[in-house]
Amino acid sequence: MRINPLIRAYIAAVMIMRKSGLAAAAVLLLLASLYHAQVGVSILAAGERCVRILLPSLYLYSILAGVVTRGGLLGGTGRSSVAVTVLLSQIGGYPLGAQLVMGMLRSGSISRAEAKTMLCVCVGCGPGFLLGTVCGQMPLQARIWMMLSVSVPQVAAALMLLRDIRPEEQHAKSLHGAGLVTASVEAAASAMLKICSMVMAMAGAMAIAEGLGLFRLAGVIHAQAPVFLRSVLEVSCITEWIAQGGSLPVAAALLTFGGICVHLQIASLCDGMLPWLRFWGMRLLCSAAAYGLCRLGLPYVCREVQTASLVVTPELPHSSQGWLPGACLLLMSVMVLYRSDRVCGSSRSVTHPTKNAGKIAFRR
Image (cartoon, rainbow, N blue to C red; front, top):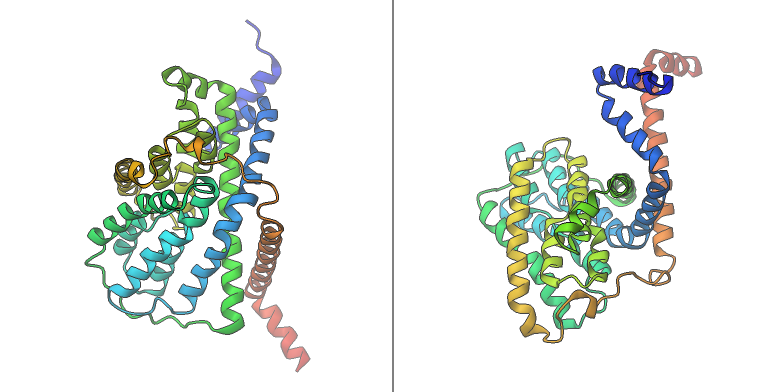
């Protein structure tokens, strides 16, 4: 049997790239080319979710994380700084806890082992993300109960696991004034670009899986299984779960779990030190607790609520956030470009010290 020369060339390229670890990238490139229409639509929808949901709910909190860590506000010893970190991680959104913990580690106030333990419990969706995806049009009592259902299990886990952690006094120099704000905004912009890039990359991978029919196979098990699986992979897809009438206790469990894409975002901020087995075990345990707590109390809090579709619209209006998401995206991009240009400039100075010294001597 004769083999098409193009196929033969592709097989040869894969065999070569396999030795250098690029075979998976080649396969993904081929699949993305085959399903380019689905991938494009999915990535565009993910980018819209980033602009309309993630940026308004996470960007300002990410700046707050930089102000807290670089300004020395977590410089206290004992349990107070741990308590502040846990509290802010539940308020500011999924990546904020990882940013705070890594800031404490880099300042020397906690050890590497303590940081790994804190990373397992300092994870929370935050009220901004919760209101933007699930609780936007709920009655006040139901909103409060959903927030408690998502946060209480994780705070309880933090109280049990972090009771023996007593951070030491930080010796790093704290920033103040304009320098503190500039550094915090730059770091937040870099973190948000990583997060949004990961969301869109996951959307592309999910579009390929959709093209291969993997989600249709899940639909054989249950009608809502495909959208549930999408929400497990990317938690912002929980709006689809809501649109199909999914139950609120399951939504609470999904928000507590965070989704695989969020886990990868957290890992990208942790310099490769995220303890995956412990982290996933704690996510599953807290998700089960959130499901049980929400199911137990929601009928008493709001008797009218049976499914999410009765109280939540699946999509936010395009004008609900106004100009804020676009302004955040523009500011974020400008600060990242400024930071990268400054880093490149400093690296050139370090690379050619003698050349720069000669220029300085000549000027003298």
